[in-house]
Length: 438
Image (cartoon, rainbow, N blue to C red; front, side, top):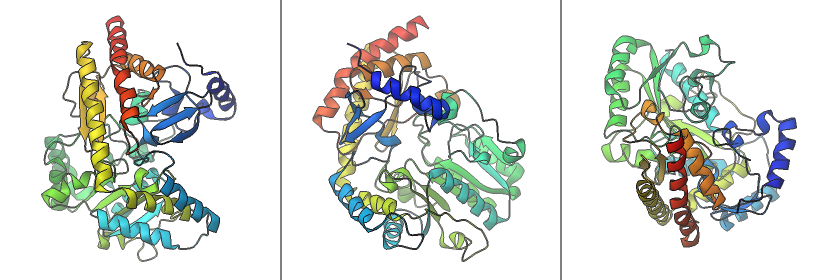
């Protein structure tokens, strides 16, 4: 029987009267899959509960941050204690120092600056790279999303791909004319652009492992090649780990490649997991580069709520609880789900490929491998919409877009995983029917 969504539908109508599209981030509106977006009332562990009382196994985990699951008791206790002391001071606080120390200890960065969103982190990193090098040109890859920074919205994946637009009105050509966009995983294109523009390039920015066109891992040695190419031409290598940081592994994507291969990015952006579910992000990197930031250096960056004591407390509690055992559990659960998804789709005769990096994975309804945005764009939108709703009716909440990553948490236990496994064959058959009729 279809789930009752009357309360969500009523809230959506109210929201559309006062908020553009009824949502505060476009993909949440379900435009890509159709139907009524679910308004969530509460969450605990691996489960979401909407305003109609329907429960869902959560496979988006707030788009990555909820590594420990929702409402983890130790994170809640730390946050409640912090709230009792006050919510914002506009001064330095101990939690921001402790969180910075934790990030430096776990990653490649030497110094870190906090902001309130991933968009702020990438925007600030780009400004710092330009200020440090004295150059203006930025290189990025098609399908990589780095937040809604004007200069980086050219061929950005994720939400823009979901709505089938290459950029957005409101961004003048002057904002993107210094941004050069290349196909992902294409070494020849990188070599060519540096040969032609190397002395003008301030930085190359890339998702450490793209997750905003679905998961498209860097080919072996690709990130090392980017780091080496930038160094050779005096440009900075900016690794965007807003999604992968502390999520793909304990050290993020860098823990899977750079830490093993012996290279470090010049700048790194972080978000999501490091905020423990609160609006928090950061950028960091080499001490000499970070030293160009005000008040030490001439590159200005500031934020009223940067390093907020509640957000940094939540992030610190989350990272301290994110042990090797947590990553082992999430990795095993993800392996079970992605294997079952592939088997169900194969049994239903649906062309597909499942790709992953660390604990993150996604399902493409197209033959693989998917190595760049052009490949990702061949996924079946109609097939995914049918797949999504078949899962939703069986109490599994997937990303409402074919271009997003699936996330699990340490709270995904046998009951949660079994619910997903039971739903997959039905969803695969629904996708097959939709693709046959397309």
